[in-house]
Amino acid sequence: MIILVGSKIDQASIQGSLGKPEYSYFFLMKDFLPALERLGRVLLVKSTEEIDRLYEQHRAAGEEVVFFSFSPPHQAPLGLSCPTVVVFAWEFDSLPSVAWDGNPQNDWRYALANLQGAICTSRETAGLVEHAMPDGFPVIALPAPVWDRYAYLGSPDGLPIELGEREFPFAGIVIDSPTLGLSADGLVRKPEPVVEPPEPEIERLLLSGAPRHLIWPLSKALFKGWWREMRQPLGPLLNAPLPVEAVAPQDPAAAPKPQLLSVSGVVYTTVLNPADGRKNWVDLVTAFCWAFKYTENATLLLKMTHHDLEHYRIVLMTLLSRLAPFRCRVLVLHGFLEDTQYREFIRASTYYVNASSCEGLCLPLMEFLSSAKPVIAPKHTAMADYLNDQLAFVLQTSLEPTCWPHDPTGMMFTHKHRLNWQSLVEAFRDSHQVALSDPARYQAMSRSAYQQMQHFAAVESVSEPLMRFLDEVLLSASKPSQDLRIDRSLAE
Figure (cartoon, one colour):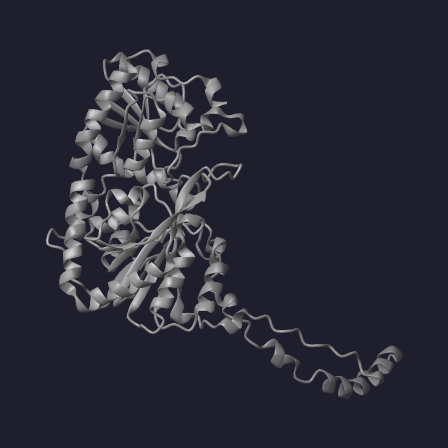
């Protein structure tokens, strides 16, 4: 069997695409490759013309061919000769069902009806597709099979707690709270000094064109002390790092070398896109600093996945200045982590933290669990498939109305899960207490994370149901297409 795969973002463009819409589909595609390679020969494609050409070529040789589009349904290519399966993550309790902008593909029922199958990364979303589509439409819920890539970082017996100094390499921009001189005073704009009008005698001399030696003694008295005002510090915001474009060369050969960053104590790690409001990163930072205001051995390791530092720098610096003083440490990383660096990043962590209002899968959370790291996270949307109190400090949430993120109308057709901020503060404190005083419980949570993720997200666990799903797709594709096609008029 020939399996064609494609994503909007590829290896060459991923570093400049961090934080942009659908950038995470590149990582989703990479994680699915080992399972797909067990089923057939996998070829990466970059255009619809290439898909149809390869389809005709391999069909003529007697091979079965299928295309996996790693994209949301409204961006999947329709009308291809090759049977097409869309692989997508979705984090809401309803599917887009409105063809806004006059595009019927924005109604996902129309898009899915013109495809030959769907792989959803959560059971909730697979249930929505089953409900929306006619009987017989191939759909399955499968997680990205990440366990095999990270299992060697963990242990079947669980990891013992480690509180000593650990190091990991990083080549991007680092914002480290203890070095910033944080103070809320730096956020207050001091009134401009009042400039008094010139003394009558000086004004008269200036207008008369008098020599300098007559004007200087008077003007010296008038402007005495001006330099002291100019030398006053202007607050921590001006001491923040420069934009990444100003310090990181565009030439990859001239890229900065990784520096070794050191952490110790209990390290809470999160990886998120600061442009995504669903991640609640401001709540996460405030809860951490409030929980550990007087605690020195707690560090929040915040890895930002965004291409533009200026998108969040001022918000971050203002937030930290308002929270100061605090004894805990907030360490923010801006830049790309290579695979080897990312693994050392995981090793240095004690817990992973997720405070999102909804998730389509959350690959970093699964990767840390596969590495036997316990977590703090809410149990909803895709995370409900693999989280429980054996491996996580579960956060409290409640439903609230919201809109689909790409809906230009902003109509509230769906829901997200509102974070209970106090439960996050308590989870920070409880997890810190476990790390310091109950190493047996920490290791038991670590063991549960490792073993449960092996069952849930190993390549073998995913490839077997994936094989059965592919057989169903090829059987369905051999039937007349109108059996599953939705009339375009129903989507308009």
